[in-house]
Image 1 (tube, one colour):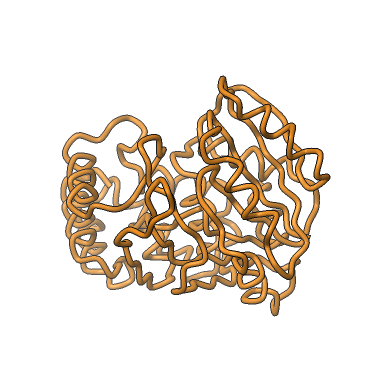
Image 2 (cartoon, rainbow, N blue to C red):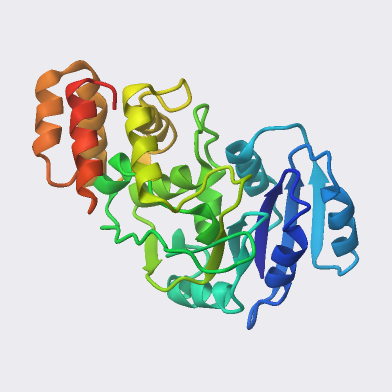
Length: 300
């Protein structure tokens, strides 16, 4: 059994198409759990229609915004072998969940495991767009400094979800980045699939989108120069939460790297060592450079 966890908010335009693509998944048993984050359009009426299939349950709550709404779903979901995050406006290819489960099932559902894949960008009518290709190193050091994962492609084992339920972070700018950081830190089995199994729809109401590289880099520079409160010192604040919740469970090497990452906040020498540390690298040169600048400015 796979529980698909969807957070909705005023999603009436694309919701039916997404739900249909989930219910048409091949080779797996699927149930959908939806948490509505305070919709005022026809989203709840659409969810009521689909509840009649017996494959969907939903509930409403106060507006928590995307990250906390998804994490609340993770905390509330019934027991299952696997769990998948799901946006309200994408389209899943029929093999998405089977490919994911097949790639991590060898370790068993009780062990922490995480799958994610490349996305294929599409416009509002699902016509293909040039996609942003990622080639992650899949290391803990990379996870500390590079925030790249798309929650809409993630499938988690029961073992990993049990770990996520052990600690509720006070600082949570992005649910998917948090889950990935914890998975890397504790040494979970992690699989990245270079083949996309999702059409990641880009439209005017995306919470976070992808696409134009110039826009992407402009956004990164703006956050570096003028970070708002939610993203100021993001890497460090997430590392603090990680240490609070899971510090005692980390393998020795990851624990030592996390300690260095935290110590850098009060030591220029340590931050210079972090710049030279090959473990704190990602494949994107500009991201590395921005990280080094943030270390020099002590705003990482």
